[in-house]
Amino acid sequence: MNKTGYTEVWNLDKLFSFGHNSRQFHDHIQQLEGKVSKLEEKLKAFNKISNINESSKVESIIQQIADIQINLSQANSYVTCLLAQNPKDQNAMNLRAVTFSTNARFESPLKRFQRIILNTSHQLWEDIIETDELNRYKFILDEWRKKAEILLSEEEERLVSDLMVDGYHAWGQLYHSLLGSIKVKLKINGESKELSVGQTINLRSHPNEDIRKTAHYEMEEIWKENEELFSQILNHIAGFRLEVYKHRGIDNVLREPLIENRLKEETLNAMWVVVSKYKKPFIHYLNEKAKMNGDKKMQSYNFWAPIGKSKQKIEYEDAVNFILEHFSHFGSELENFARQAFDSEWIEAEDRPNKSTVAFCAGFPVSGESRVFMTYGKRMTSVLTLAHELGHAFHNYSMKHVNGINRQYPLSIAETASTFSEQIILDAAIEKTDATEEKLFLLDEKLKRSVMNFMNIHSRFLFEKNFYEERKQGFVSPSRLNELMQDAIDEAYVGSFENASSHSWVWTPHYYLTRSPFYNFQYTFGYLFSLSLYAKSKEKGKAFEREYLELLRDSGSMSTEVLVLKHLGEDITCEDFWEKGIKLCVKDVEQFINLISS
Image (cartoon, rainbow, N blue to C red):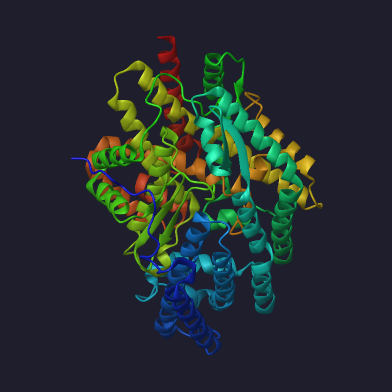
């Protein structure tokens, strides 16, 4: 029997009581500071690795680093949640400044340790990482050794870390505060409303075209009014990053995100070549859908519009039960985990003003929990977002018992787990219905995901790549940013999209992340990779869940190429791998066209 009465508001007090006034949180930070101090002291007395017998000492340092990392993650996630539920929470902003400071301070001893292992002779290094104490950390230690090659001097890196707090981290924080404070005034069914950006974005899938169109143009006006301010934020974030790169001797702006995602550039290039090669079927899909609205080309404000006859409103309770039902068809562990998330009040989904616009999942590794944040809009898109974020949370759960530093998995693989969960829900819904119009509606929702990953995400990648090249020469004006955005959209959609937002660079928060640039290609990677995994799950049934969990657990301890080769036996530097996934999406287009014809 389905449960009733799921809460749409999360519980953060179980993590740290009393929110931004939490004494428990302040104690946590003080303990963290103490742990960083102990690490600093230990490293002062340990300048180099002299012989293989020091493997136990190295392991002890690794354990200290891992402990600090998971406690920092706990603190960072908590503050992120506080600011998401109320971007104007000044006390939470103060806590963010404190956590930024602790993060920056930790960077110095971490980089010092990376230098120590870099300065170890090649032969001694090869011997020591094969010892019983260090062998399980071999991949991460080799990765740290490579990262140390591009570091500045210890004093310079400490200065950079200190500057980041009030440098581009502060600019990123300002961006989210500004975006969260914007209100959009609209008339919906004759009633005047003041909505947040997140609530307004949810209207893109509203069944009424006039509402979708009005919301689109109202937001465009707001972006135009604020473009000067947002362009300054974007330019300062990019400028700071490029200055650091210049001093580190990094010319290729993709180098850092490729290292962070444990990907080779040839892998990324192979993926985009295949995506570009197979765009024609998706242009056909867009044109056919445009015709259904009486247009020659797809209007951007109609892209997310539902088609066919379907239940337009899906209550939150129904969405939860729908997800649990179909997760259970994949495997009991996924179902039980999702049930725990709902029952334990890990989900913030209430549709209310003054929330952040960005859906996310925050991991709390110390307590072995996650929190999911979104604004639930009672439509299929919201159901899919909920499933997507639960996929991230399941990935966190799968790493629960993985040792220390091997928990840190790249964003590209993180998007695989989330996209996989979306696939389960959407494909199950398509298979469940025999009604042509309902199937058409759901298939359209699936194809939107393909277009988003093969066209929209591609446009984001192209924009960011071109923007950084121009930023190297100086400040990029708002009008030029609009041109770069429009050019990227035209290229990625091959001219099949009209009235697209040339201000996408303003309201796409991924451009303003200060952790690393280029948080875009990971979605396309995860989407195509998840298709391969999903195909295997269909072949093997519930027995595949165990293999899936093993892949997720390995995701923090090997390169992405090695991970896929180990678990799928595929070489992702070759175009053949990517073609297998995208051809499955082409079949969806063919099915869609056949349904329209019938």
